[in-house]
Length: 110
Picture 1 (tube, rainbow, N blue to C red):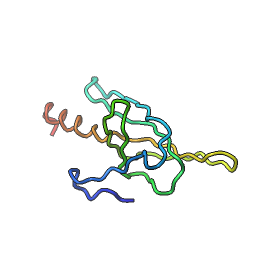
Picture 2: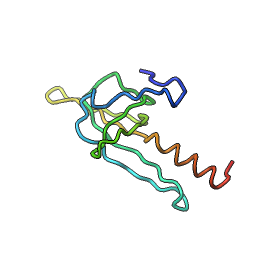
Picture 3: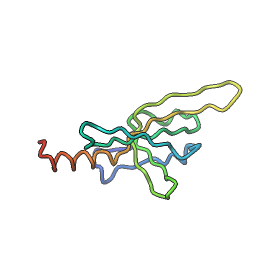
C-alpha cells in the first residue's frame, strides 16, 4: 500500500471501515517512567486481506465520532476453512508522537 510519502500533513490514512472493521478498536495504554509519557495502542479486527501490512497508515472512527489515525505495528491472522478469516491488528496511535515531542521540548531533552 505505501500510503505515506514522509510528509505528515499529506499522509493518507486508509479507513479500516473499508476492510470490514468488526468492532471499534480497544485501547491499550502504557505509561512511561515517572508517569510522563503515555503510549496509546489499539487492537482491531478486520476481515482478512492481503492489502494491509505492518507500517501502513490506517484510521478508524471511535465511538465519539472522532477519526483516530494509526500506524499498523503488528499483524496476525485467524484462518479457517469453515468460518470467517480475520486479521488482528495492533495499531500505534499516531498522536503519540505529538505527546512525546511536546515532552521532549518541555523537559529540554534534546
